[in-house]
Image (cartoon, rainbow, N blue to C red; front, side, top):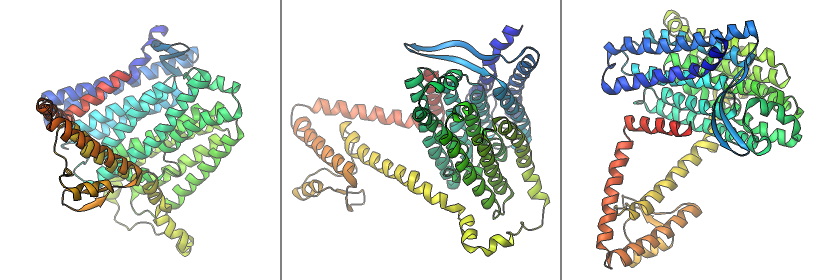
Length: 521
C-alpha cells in the first residue's frame, strides 16, 4: 500500500490538468456552455482538486508515520550521456508543507469562485485556466528537478497572463497582462541559465544533486549557478526591481487576485529560494544579496501601501512587504522560519482578499489618511505615490525595447517575408529612380505615403536585403520564364494567410499551446 501511494504522487498535478482538458472539450462540443454548464464545470474542477488534496494528505500521513519518502523517480524522461532527466518528485518537509497549503487553498478558491463568478460570460474559461494554474503550482512545489519545476513555472506564467487579461475587451487589462508576462519572461531567462549551469557543471538537474553537488564547485561557480535562479525568483515574487507588475495584476477577477498574487503564485520565488537555501548558505555574497533585495522589497511594500486608497491594492503592497521579510529570513539562514512564514501568510492573505469585496460594500467611511510624518516628507510622499518610479524603469528596460523589436520584426515581415511569398507590401516597389534613391539612403514610404527613414543598423540591413530581394523578383522571376514560380509563390502565400487566420483563433491557439507542452513533456 505504501509503495502504491508513493507511486501515485504523479496524479497530484495531473488530475487538475485532466479537469482542464475535460472543461475545454466540453466547451468546444457545447456540453458545458452557459449557465446550465456551470454545475458540471464546478464539480469536475472541485472533484479533481479534492482528489489531488486527498492523495497529498495521504502522503503527509505516510510521512508522519513512516518517515519522509524523499526523492521519487517515476519514469525516465530523457537520456543522453552523461545527462539524464527524470519524471521525479521531491517529497520532503518543505514540498509537503507548501504543497498541502496549495491544495487546500485551491479547493477553497474553487468553491468560492463558483458563487462569485455565477452567470459570468467567462465562467468556464476561468475554471479551465484556474485548473491549469493549480496543476502548475503543485508541479512547482513537488517537482524533483529544475526542469519539471520550470514546466510548472511556465504554466503558472501563462495562466497568470490569461487571467489578468480575463476582461480582454478592456485595454487596461490586456496591457497589464502583457507587462506582467514580459517582466516574468526576464526571470524565465534566469531560470534557464540556472538549468544550463547545473547541467554544465553538475551534469544533473535533480534537486538533491544540485544541493549536494554545489559543495564541490568554486564560490564563483556557485554564485553564477544560484544567480540565474535568483533572477527567476525575484521576478516571480515581484521583488525590487520587478515589483511594479504585481499591483497591475489585480485587473483579474478577485479569486485569481487572491490566489495568484496574494497567496500562492507570488510565493513561488520564495519557495525556489527555500529550495536552494543549502546552496545559498555556502556563499556569504549570496546571503548579502538576498538581505539587500529583501530590505528594499520590504521598504517598497511598506511605504507604497501607506498611500493606497483601494483595499486590494493595499493588501498587495502588504504582500510585497511580507515577501521582502521572507527573503531577509532566507538570507540570514532562517529557512525554517521563512517556510512557516510563507505558509501562514498564504492562508491569511487569501482570506483577506476573499473578504475584500464584501468589505468594500459594507464600509462607507473614507480611506485611511496618509500618516502625518509621511505627508510632511514631500519628496518621500511623491516617491510613494509614483511607486518609486519602477513603472518608468520597467518601461525603459522591457516595454520600449519590446516595442522596438516588434517594429523591426514588422518591417522584416513587410519587406522580406511578404515579398518572398508573393504578397503585396505596404512599401511600394522601386519603380522610379527617385524611389530607388530614397531606398538607397534608408528612406521608406509608409501606407499613408509619408517618407520615413529606417531605424538603426537592423533597419538599414533589412532595407538592403529587401531591395536585393525585390531586384531578384523583378529580374529573375517576372522577366524570365518564371511566371509559374511566381504563381506558385502566390499560392503558397494564400495558404499561409489561411493558416495564419486559423492560428489567430482562440481554439487553435489553445491547441498549439497544448501540442507544445506535449512535445516538451
